[in-house]
Figure 1 (cartoon, helix red, strand yellow):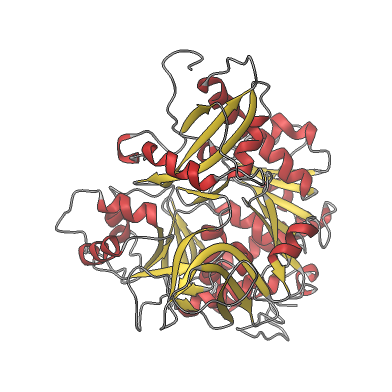
Figure 2 (cartoon, helix red, strand yellow; figure 1 turned 90 degrees about the vertical axis):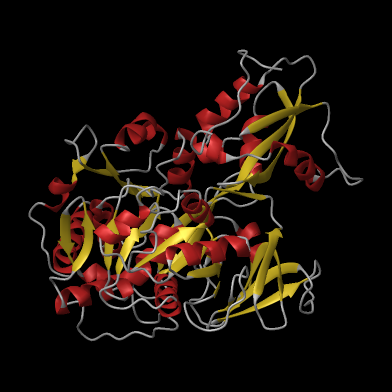
Length: 547
């Protein structure tokens, strides 16, 4: 049976459809259209569809069944999609893994999700191999880009002799089935696994396609990590939905950005605030607006003068957004047409409604700051909850309402203005960092009695991470030793840039840390990333232990 037989879908709710069936439909009607271009190679919809089917059959033959968790722990490359598409067609649940994970983080995620299989490449396999004995549930490891090693099978070996026909396991999936568990930093000491259904993934794809004007034949410049919600949900979904082409480059480059837009005939791309500031920091050239991209999605907040300067210099329109993984990535945006308020996140999108409430959940009038709460109108408008975490699920998801934990205000015309994060969250180079996650590593050290972590402005990378540490009595632990502990246990973007020792931390009468006071204190460490090393850089002492 072909994937296009006897099916239909509802663009608003996602009912009755999956993105994989839509992809297969494109492959049936336009097999020669490029799906992915990278490194001078072109992979068509037809090529990918057949390979994804073979991967699905190969997984099924090796015991992967409907509902099993299968991780993809790979760098950005076409084979990443083979793993993702194939496991979905086998009925499995997709679990993206950050290539920035420390060994501890990787072990935690794969055990927590109970992964049965994992896709790796030659760059990530050594990391998995070093800790695989600590992840007993993994029965299958599929490797690409290297010869098979003990306990692995190559991607070519997985698909050898398999059919390239649409698998029955894919036909059995419904919009209500769990499709994705994406781990995101929250206010807890461990990342939470956000669960999205197939209907939710399709709803996100349709929403972004409609709001940002994706059309068939769009050429999208892809440099966000595919394990991240921007690269793997907000961009990937509409690319499939609209039958567009993903042009993959290894990484974002401010100095070569406009050249890449021209060379690859790009028509659309996503940026976050760090990218915009990096581009504005480049010397102007007469060719800055010499490209075909007339709208770019903008994530995270920017000052109005930064937006206007960027648009004038680069001849494009920045489409602001607000959202969270729990609301399928984006629920507020300013599209490339219509009214705008420069500096706002835009207006709430179709399928959602928005309120600003006080600490008791009572609606606040226009202009008053409070928590942003999002109501999802359709059956697949939000995440299903957090994996194995009833307490946080109940606190965040109340019926169709999602409590964001962010503070904002809505003006008289319905535009949302982001104020601050109510949660103890730090935004570092487009990534969320939970203060509690960093604090957990610090207080685990025998020389640390207490610790509190806050963010402070970083001129290029949104926020820098500042840790305030209280030593245990008699301890002489220094900054460098604590930096080493964080380096060993955390992704580089989660490691503090500054550690300050204190005799005690400020607390209120209830004993809670007064983080606002610490944030005020941290302002003296305002970081200018233009003068510093890459994301994980931190300010070490010249002495071995520091003081």
